[in-house]
Length: 460
Image (cartoon, rainbow, N blue to C red; front, side, top):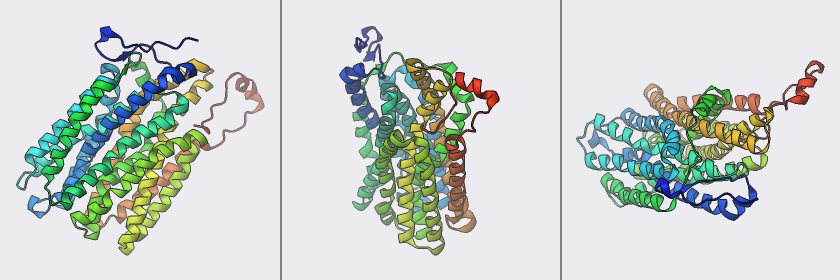
């Protein structure tokens, strides 16, 4: 078999790939893997900076002392609005890849990061109104959209057998933008620099990401917005089930990333510098372990890894509750960081489940080989934007829960109790939908079972 051509289409005015068949092992080994890995690298770079800008306000609020006139509730509102916008823009960002091409949209989405960064740089000083800070935080939400477009783009480059690793690495490399901006913030605080210095440091890095995406990335011409696929994905119950489960993993990760420093300051009286010393550790470890979650899911099945990960998340949350009640800062910090690690592991395993679920549905419909792979790519690609958006809304819920908990009882304990109950519900849904063994076929249905494969998600 001759490998499909990968020559750029000159008439399209850019680096367009006409034919792309990653499921063909000959093509993949001789041509496809090299191109896919290059695009993955530069996609990670842009997404990484996007996450940093999105979560920038989790650091900025640590700088904002009494002279800014903001209450703890005001600060939780600011980070909540950044989370909200970052979740909402994920839906249009998903479809933008097919409209503009993966390369061009990476350039555009990276360029948009300059807007919130420059805006915050201009207004960041005592005396600025709460409403102005809120608008700047909402603008920073565009950084959250980079994840959706990046995942949709990279999903098209890799074969099914490599998606868990590739999507985990892509997302993990992007997620690392959270602890990196917190580490940079720690360095700025430690050097007695102001928030404007932190903002100014990111502007040239954004420009570099834009230039490298323009020079090094490609677009796959066969990637198209399939409105039928989008409608089918929206109607499929598995899209919404996986959205619910992703709230528990990624929603927790991003929500805790925004809130960790504020909780340490508000509940345990940590100074900005003391909070910054530990705030980055959880997001860093959670980001680094995400590819491992994808790899474990490739090997053992995403549903199995996700199920037991929720058990561990519930256990860690229980320890956090005990530490919160006893006001034990060391125990609280260790348990919270462990919870971060588990959210990262679950991020990788849940996202790996998505292409596996729709591939399993294709097989159950009687499709085989290339037809099954095409069906799985079509539905999984369409569903990823919705799942990513709904999952990110979990971060909004977490920050609003913390805000209400501190207003009501003066600590985050009430919020953690709610999170514990939610993780228990996620465990039950994962088991009931994806791991419970289907009932054996009766005699009356045996003939139907022989002609149509029984749908099973145990291996997704």
